[in-house]
Amino acid sequence: MQNYKITLLKGDITKVKADAIVNAANSGMLEGGGVDGAIRYAAGKSLLEECIKLRKEKIPDGLKTGEAIQTKAYNLPAKIIIHTVGPKYYSEDIGLLKNCYINCLKLAEENNCESIAFPAISTGAYGCPIEKSAKIVKEVLSNYIARSLKEVILVLYSQKDYDVYNKEFA
Image 1 (cartoon, rainbow, N blue to C red):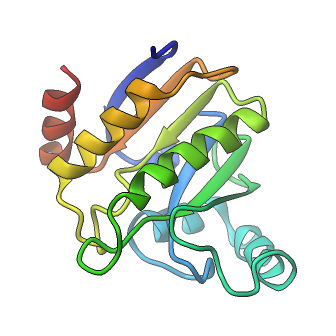
Image 2: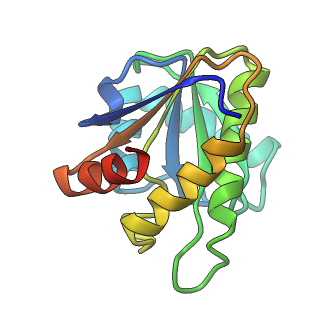
């Protein structure tokens, strides 16, 4: 049974105050558009330098779909950024989307975070329908028991996406 607050927000994830902000990254961890581009721009160039170092030292083959890794937050209003790679809807197992959320939640708790902000992972360029995303996220959060987390913030960029999530979580 869920033991934390779920908050839905419409807006820019780079402006959300949370202990952990989740980045919908690509496996290369270096450059991306959408949420990834916005987070990189807001965090500053030191984030790219840390990601280059991570690629060399910890993930030479890139971050695998469903996995998560953390960096410092730099200029973002957070303690850490948790990067995860969502599945491509038409070519990968969409079940891996659950792993993205679960692994991010676990990593946030390993860092004693009390709040975490998620974008709608895989719904942009990776093509997952927002309705499917909302159902998967609700299932994960319904079954996740938190140790340190007090709030999960779901940040939706568009009004349409917000409305879909709001209906699912009502």
